[in-house]
Image (tube, rainbow over all chains, first blue to last red; front, side, top):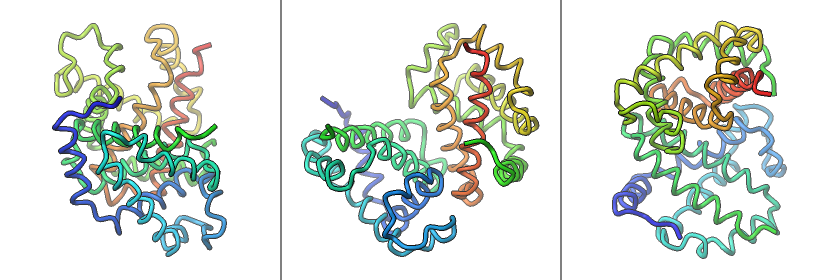
Amino acid sequence: MVVWSEQERSIINSIFASLDYDDIGPKALCRCLIVYPWTQRYFGGFGNLYNAEAIQTNPNLAAHGIKVLHGLDRAVKNMDNIKATYAELSVMHSEKLHIDPDNFRLLADCLTIVIAAKMGSAFTPEIQATFQKFLAVVVSALGKQYH
Amino acid sequence: MSLNKTDKERVKAFWSKVAGKADAIGAESLARLIVVYPQTKTYFAHWKDVSPNSPNVTKHGKTVMGGVANAVDKIDDLKGGLLELSELHAFTLRVDPANFKLLTHCILVVLAAQFPADFTPEVHVAMDKFLAAVARALAEKYR
């Protein structure tokens, strides 16, 4: 059972309340495909991913980044029950999308770095710890239904 | 996943931009490591004060970053250039190599936070590869 302090809840809610999804979503996904190029294997139908510039200007990828980032909204609203909240999504990622769950961790790391770039010194070590704790729970929940 | 010519050029170019702040980057990276990954504090049990802003952490962060700066210099032969440091980590410090990844991540977060415009995805992948190569060189003598 994941336990959240009042401060941790407040930090997570605050980050997502002021999040520019249209900016951060594409940045996080594109960074993941550039920094960990093997993740491109899941985007065969998305068009030109030939180099960093192509990736960063690909409209399909940008739209998908926004969609994936909004996928975190339900976890923010259900912090005490993320595992159950994402049970169906986990099944989908396993059985329909066939995504290696290690990729969730890679994307989470890229999201952390994009948020750090946006927030600068406001992204304190304590806030980083809380954000990474949140993402770790999400990543674990998404991998739960794989067998 | 070894460093190619472009990686090395990117690392050197980016490092020349950030080298002036190396001490602060090191201190902040180490502070983040012990806050975000509290298990890493086990390596600093000999310090009375292991709080993120303590003098020990600040000083040690500077030492570690000095090692990274040295590695940039030795980028064409990390195994040879970091031989002594590898022996230190293998026989004396015996830091579990899994922790190198954790510190690498914290260094990347600090670089992103302090140099958002320069820490582009291309620079990010080059630095990630470089720090992974440094970690491999440091673990060379472990077994």
